[in-house]
Image 1 (cartoon, helix red, strand yellow):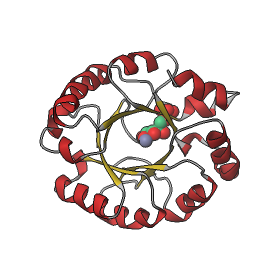
Image 2 (cartoon, helix red, strand yellow; image 1 turned 180 degrees about the vertical axis):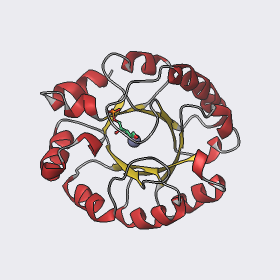
Image 3 (cartoon, rainbow, N blue to C red; image 1 turned 120 degrees about the vertical axis):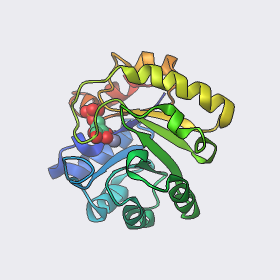
Length: 213
Ligand code: DX5
Ligand code: ZN
C-alpha cells in the first residue's frame, strides 16, 4: 500500500516543518486538498501556498481538486508539476476532455468519485485514467468517519480496472487508519490518503508504516 498524507491536517503555521516531516517519515505522495467554498463548504489553499508545499516536499504532489471550475484550477496548478491532478466527476461536464488536457500538460489525470457515485460512471473513462480516487467521506473536511460502503465499491472498481486498464491505480481518501487499511488492501486499493491519522499520531513514521501493508 502506498501512503499519501493529506496536508489539510498539518499545522499551517509550521507547514515547511510538517511537509518535510511526512516526506522524511517515508510517505509516497503529498496529498493537497484544494477547496473553493462552492463545490464543498470549505475553503483551503491556492497556488501561492501549494508552491511553498512543493518547495518543501521531496515526494511528488497529489492534488485533489474540490472545486466548481476544474479547468481554471488545472491551469493554475499545472506549473507546479504535480504527479497527479484529480477532479470530481460530479462537477465536470466534459470529463474526457479534461483528462486529455491534464495529460497534455505532462500530469497524470485522475477522477474522484463522491460516496454516492457508482464505479460504473467510469466505464468509458477508465482506459484513459492513471488513477481513480474513491471518497470514503463527504469531501470538505478532515477528521470525519470512514464510510464503509467504499470497500464494496473498491472491489467492483478493481474488477473493472483489471479488465479495462490494469495500470490504473485506486486511491481511497477519508477516515483511513490502521483499523480499515486491511479491508482496503483486500479490496484492491493501491494508495490511501490519511490526514488526521498521520498528523495526530505522536510518531508520523510509525503511523505511515502502519498503513504500508
Ligand atoms: C476531505 C479531503 C481529505 C481529508 C482526509 O475532503 O479530501 O483528503 O483531508 O482527512 P482524514 O484522513 O482526516 O479523513
Ligand atoms: Zn483529499
